Length: 367
Image (cartoon, rainbow, N blue to C red):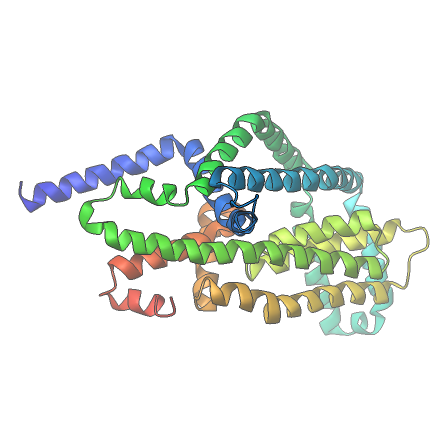
């Protein structure tokens, strides 16, 4: 068999593999989610394995079962207390007349920044900012779209049992037999590439484990600080926790996430402010929200992100920014969430198999 036929067969097999991944995308999603869960929960599994039952340590099966039980208790408790609060917040926001809110906020801005509004720069600048904020807010709070999202979520929850059973079953075996995922991938790889792929999988596993565990800590900390900050300036807990949760989860998207979270939080804060029976001073309240997000972002940029990204992603900020924009253009918000993990895997693979190229050497020199 000559080289041309080998290349043709290789291309055909690659196309077939892509088609199979797409056709069985639901199963692939189950496997990917299970792999992530096994990576994140591996420290819990290792901790349980250290215990002694008499003269023996717990078996892998028992440790995996206890780990899954802990995960499901945590997930169920989280949704048990967060979902009702989020639903009430959506109902609250859906009953708000946004044009009236904009009108009242505009009056508050004019009264609070009178001297700025009197200048020609202030008039033009404030008008442009107001128009942009109105357009963004109307798009952000398009409750017709939110209804579509809720319907999609409801449809997804219709298959919750299958999803929960499949991911639990697969995660159990990924935890019990740590090598199972690697062995499964190696089965479809030519023998000459096995050693390199084993090294790739080992590096990817370590990097992604640190990344996902760090992300969980980042979400929790940002949620806590934003929620606490909003409560300090006078926002009730039910509103503050929703703003904190949204800010924490959307902050996973570097650079763009914090801006989206701050815009959402301040807009909800202004709506809540206008519903208060005895509102505090508007300028103080506004600067309080700004200060909350400034402090949180300083903590995130100076403490949280350096620990997470420097030890896992090890990429230049410009690289991350471009990758996130590309992922957002191709797949929207979900693509932005998964952009960094996927880019990390691509860089590790490129370093292992394409190390002779200058571009690859440049992009992977810190790995």
